[in-house]
Structure formats: structure tokens, C-alpha cells
Amino acid sequence: MIQKTFPILISLILISVLVLSLFLDDDEPQRIEGSIMGTTYNVIVFSEYDNLEQSIYDSFNSVNLSMSTYLNDSLINRVNYSDINEWVNVSQDFIEVLRYALDTCIKSKGLYDVSIGKLVDSWGFGPLEKNQKPPPKDIQYLKTQVGCDSIEINEEASAVKRKRDVALDFSSIAKGFAIDKVYKHLYSELNIENIFIELGGEIRTTKHKTDKTPWKIGVVSPSKPDKIVYSFISSNHDSFAMATSGDYRNIRIFNEEEYSHTINPIVGSPNNLSRKSVSVISDNAMIADALATALNVMELEAAMDYANEYGIKALFIYEQDSKPNLLFSKELQKVKI
Image 1 (tube, rainbow, N blue to C red):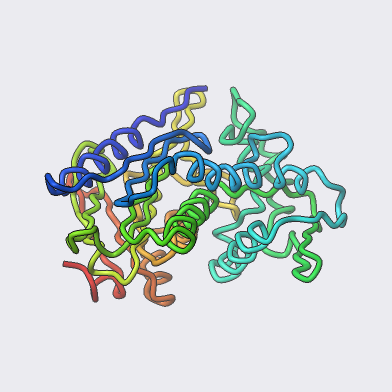
Image 2: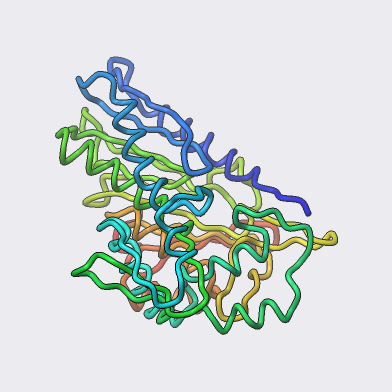
């Protein structure tokens, strides 16, 4: 089994170059970099505060400690290893993420589902390495266990329980939530008004920088990750968050056959590999993160219909005749330049 994840690294470099190229010479932003949640982060602020590194890391890490399946003692693993119908006390952050995920699961008719952790693991996209495809009988069983109704929330008690043999996997939403957590810390608690946060290619910014010029964020081609094919301007949006999901970003190879990390919960297996990406713009990174994944699971036409039905700002990039084609949802057409 081989894993390929290199396109995202190039994407992150391009994002950083594009953003940094827009600074004025007399601006002196603070740039804080680090690693968390299996990826890297870049935070840029125009602020007089010193020593923000620790508080930013702590904000990211609080989400990691709660929602990472790679940490044995994480909150999500306490839920995953609990008995069926056993209530497990969780944090309000955990409840917020799970509530939105379950709502999206219902709206997408199960195509977005965070109860697919065991399917994720069976295909080798979780903490455990896999050297071969899962047997069909395993997939058939796990398919019967996942579902929007497989997890129950008790908000008053701040507790959740598994109703079937499922495992939660927040990899499609936790990074977005972590970005929002850092943004809230910087903007609401420290009153910093000019912010850029990037974690694993997902982004949230304030509307402007200190000089009232916008942030400019590039989106790369799925087939040529060193080429920017479209740029968003933060000032076109009241608050700017962006997440991109693409089949090409994380791949497993079994017996010389490539499999995308994007798993369809209904069929129990990864989508057919395609050179397609979906970028979602929102005022909240958690929402953008989840919706980008949901739309990427769907076929292109169905994804566009879904985006239009729910007023989602979505950019679809797909390859045709070796060239990138761009499709804008109706809501995004209202604000794009």
C-alpha cells in the first residue's frame, strides 16, 4: 500500500506565497507557524501583542485533544470505544461539531456522515496502516451500522451515545472548527482586527488587513497543483472562510489501483478517483470544511443542485480535455469577481 499526499503541500506553499506577496513594505505582521492535527498551520496577525505562539497553539490543541482519532485518550476515542447505548460526557465544543455534522448528514441524505470512522479505518485512511482492500463482507457489515441516527445527543447533560457499532471521525470538520476556535481567541478575546489563519489548506481571515486592502486567496488546479486558477478577495465577503476538498489530495494504492480518501458512506467505499475539487466560502470555517466534503462526495450535477438549494457559495473545478473548468454556484455568482 502506498500513500500519496504531495499536492496539498504545494497548495499550502502557493497560498502562503500569494498571501505574503500582498503585504505592504511598511507593514510588519507577526507570523506564527507550527504543526498540529497531522498538518501545518500559518497564522498572520497585525497586532501589538507579543508571544501569541503559545495561546494559538493551545487553541488548536484543545480541538486536537478532543477530536483526534490518532490520540488514544481523546474525547472522540472515549466515545468510539464506549459500549453501545452508554452515555459519554463530552464538551460543548464536541456537541457543537457533532450537532452540525448530524444536521448536514440529514440534509445530504447520508452522503456526509461522521459515523464512518470504521469505514475510514478499513480503507487505511485512519490511524491504522492497511496493506490491502477490506473484504466485501466487512464493507457490507459496516455499511449497515453507519447513519445519521447512529449517534444520539443529550444537550442538557452534554453527553452522547452510540446506538450502533459505529466510530466517529471528525476529520472532515475538526480542522475548520479549530480555525474558528483560534479566530475567536484572536478576534473576540484579544480584539485583534486583522487576521489570517490557515490550517491544512483551510483558511479564515478578517475582511481586510490594517491598510484596508483585502486578503487574496488562490485556488489551485486539481491536475496541476502548482497553478492557481482562481483567486478570492476577502473584501467581497462579510467574513471570509474557505475550505477545499479534492479526491486527489490523499490517495491509497492497493495492487496498483488508486483510491481516494473521499468515502461514500452509502456504498461503503471511496469515490472513483477524479481530478475534481470543491471550494466552499462561508463566514465560518467549520461550515466550509464540512460542506466542501459533502459536495465532494456527490456527483458534480447533484453537488451543484445541493449548493444552489441551500445557498452555498461553492466553486467546482473539474478537468475536461486536460484543462480546468470552473463552475460557480448561484450564491457565489452574486459575489465573485
